[in-house]
Length: 249
Image (cartoon, rainbow, N blue to C red; front, side, top):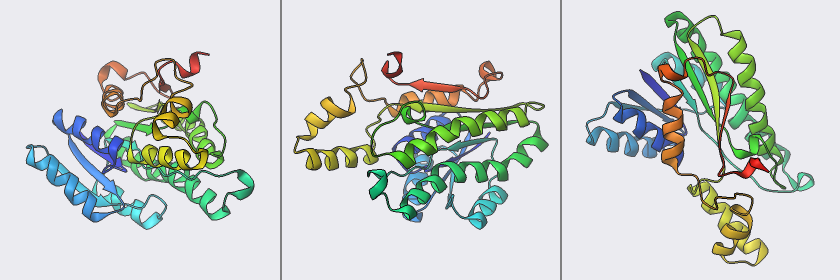
């Protein structure tokens, strides 16, 4: 299978790429920065894996069309993400729109571009990397929470529209994963609240999670891969939550 992963050079994206590559699939790392793409592709190829890369801006129609033409996906992993934290009244409108474009409109338009090929081959798997914030909210993250909630509804519609072929679309929703994005949030909140980074981790990040642990990128990669197996062929429009018990309460 050809597996296209947006945000593929980041922590979660590259873990997913490595997992699929190790299973013998061709992985395509799609990201914004050529240097990062080249580095990650070289790492995979050095291990004897089949990998390619492409510069992709999920907010740009021409970039999306180019990606779909060069690398039609059997499996599309919509993983690209950004964050901005502010009260709504302080949230720059252009930044709010950017988050929606990257994490909701982008996945929709890239899926739209890949779907004709999936339908022609009578096979397709789309996995959205969501978040615990697709299910619950946190203050100061209105755009992020709105985008991630939107992915769930989007997936249900696309599942219904393509139920006539061997196709599934699902959303994997982890709680906090210690990626560079989260590490930046920890540092920012430590400064804002006059806490140590350890205190931010324990009192803010992991406080809602009974298991008190960050979700591993290996867990997300394995869950994503499972959704592409024959054992999951009738799992579609579902939300798989990796949250250490967060939403049990």
